[in-house]
Length: 388
Image (tube, rainbow, N blue to C red; front, side, top):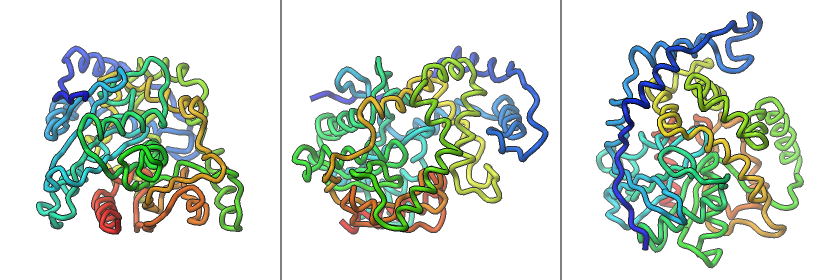
């Protein structure tokens, strides 16, 4: 049995100085005069504001202390170092929940939800709703190791099932995820559950539907309308996906030497995919929150291997289920209203791919649900787990 080793985030001052020097030396250029500030991508005005805050007010050492307030670990699984948080709260080892992030997020997305999920009685809830939390960094992300070649979501599910059962010793567990985390979680339900005959995943909860039924043809008018709208949205907003899926190394070469470029590439998605008030990024997030998420990519040189993850999706065969097969483990879904680029299919479509036993229409929130609306995220995860 692989043993987990305690881990502490401690970034060298040399690395921080290099990042600062590159942020300070960024060579600004004109923005288009026509159109709105976000029409052609990242707003130059917002990025200049972030640059000034980064240089004059943001303190990585304070962020590092916040990140280290919860226990971190690393474990080697199949030759790859897997970084994860493990919080044994009021559940006292009896109710494990695996939380998996996506791109361009990180394990930090869940930070405001950790206390309420692990220690509910300290946050206005009931002790019986508590979970043990396991929050890993995806391979090539955060403080996990970097695979030598692109490693995808199916393989990640294999690693995370071994993390839960072999490293941490849980016979069974629940799993939740959105974005790539939703697809990893889907593969846990498909390949590593009691329903599949191999694994300990008892039930899953998603805030993004990943796997598709085969044949992936609409069967109702609502499904046809959803597919047409989804294709149009991907045509308008999905250029990043195609770049990362087909030529990730070209993009990586541009981003690895530019902290400001990396921040712009990431933050434009937080603007486009979040449920904001009047398009204002600061109506939902603080500058410190967003910069800490960006820094998690920068301090460990993880932006390159993070974009490899898109290529790996297709190397592993895409998102189509074998014909006639679905994820049979009990599946919950949280429908956040401002999830636009990956808007959920109608329930009829989802039920051909998953055994949907819980469906919740949430009042607000977007793609980064746990970070945008942590209270609503916690309420829904608690209610889903009770329903099991």
